[in-house]
Image (cartoon, rainbow, N blue to C red; front, side, top):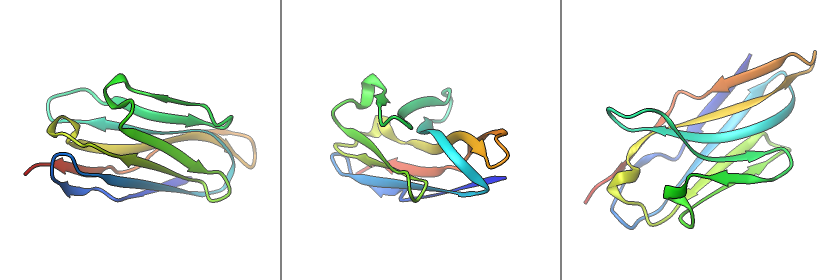
Length: 120
């Protein structure tokens, strides 16, 4: 099993910044995809940003220029730097990863989520 541990959520004022971190552990052979999703009350879960094993990234239009995703392949961690936060960014943020176990079976794991609140 792969376990994801998220950290870094909390309360921030509009215009402020937060950095989310996610660490994957378990019998991991390789990670092909690491991403951050978010879900606000009454809304569907949406992709915020993702980074692939190649290093390529993709971001939601709503966060372009404000959020930056990065990963440390050696540590199986992914971070999301969030700047210029607005109340519209408030949501539960979830980390997701996809990859292979040592026996080459594929895995797909989600973190428990971390709350981001943007309010004055």
